[in-house]
Length: 286
Image (cartoon, rainbow, N blue to C red; front, side):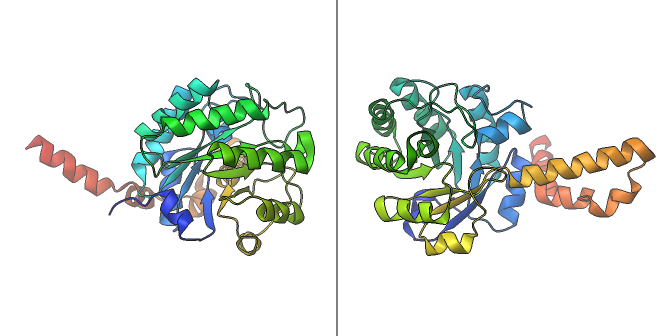
């Protein structure tokens, strides 16, 4: 079955819920659960694979490789976090070509100075609106696949206020962005204002423990947002449960109590299509 593009799903007018994956196994679970797409966040790859904070400490090559594993594992469109584009307009163009080449369906590029900070922390600094527009324009010109989408993320809400963020978003759409990702909005009303002003697809970031209140997917459907991201939700659940289990193992010396909470060997093998790959290897040996 041919993988659907993110553009085609956005065009269909649905509100797409896209959980974040830190690796291909988690992406497979996202697909199994019936979600329409997978998100790969820079924070998820930095935290989950490299054990680093989200300060643009992993390279473009590392992010591309991690995303490539995820893209290959699922038959879903993948939206990837391209941070600041990894440099100036020329580097942003190169970033687009590299994400395109691995089969990603879309990326977002943000308007922070490099190295960037997590979007829900203090101390963010922005590049000029003009410089960001140059990046967007270069990124669009670099596309080879017209279905590949480039979203512009703006972190201006907590730096320049709502009006500053809206003006930037409008400029980014004029520069060629296929959609806007307004980061760290602080109320339902602010999401509503963004939708009323910006005539382009919109991404909402429903991360935890940040500046944005918890808003349901149902509410985002009413607000006509196109994509709702849950970038680190599954990762945070995994980490907390692993922390609880490791404390128990350290204390008791046994994992037996946790067996009912574990994915079984057979469940993992089914998810990974173990038999299918065994059969493929058997044919190659003949």
